[in-house]
Image 1 (tube, one colour):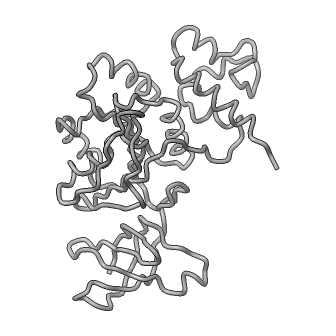
Image 2 (cartoon, rainbow, N blue to C red; image 1 turned 30 degrees about the vertical axis):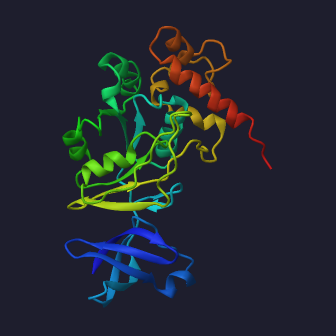
Image 3 (cartoon, one colour; image 1 turned 120 degrees about the vertical axis):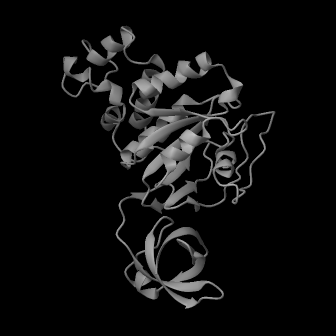
Length: 292
């Protein structure tokens, strides 16, 4: 029988078989011998050992299309990065970090702004438009008002989607709207600091339709960019590419060099000041990391 690992806790793996439900499984010792660990999101073949109790053994892990480092999951078709339009205010430096993280791991990305009911269309478009111009598809939704849910369901259909974003932006509330049968614990927002409590305690994939899965990941307030050189950072800012041929120097960092095509585009308003300032901050952060 073939299924997908939707949760892993303390050596037990919970495998969803379409039309048959979820089976509690152990991984065979052969995986330990090969130093292979099953991951949430793995497609696996299982042998059923107790149909009544829904228990089995994982016999084989099927080839992975990809493997994310953080969170450690496999076979993700899409990353849906969720930020709130307000309460809390979006942290664009953190949003850029998420985008870089997913681009680095070669996972297609869409950006979802929840709580769209709390701001005007003009306010939302003032920052949504920045990312749309960079080539990202933007979804505007409200879990509370149930705005944009049909469009969101269409985007997710037939895919395994990792939902990422900081705490308090309504990830769990959105998932509850998409799958009324799976009520996740939704966190309350601390009014004093407007930061969400950490309510998601492990990676878990939730079946929300035929071959459609959502993985809710722990809420992040900080995010370390994976280990690459500061010179590599610019390739994760797709809007720079058009203007780099106009830089005088090959390998231009777009920060201190004269005759820089990217800085000229910035001065002409063709590149977002907000994105560029985040680029400079992340570049300095990379530069200051000590090498051992």
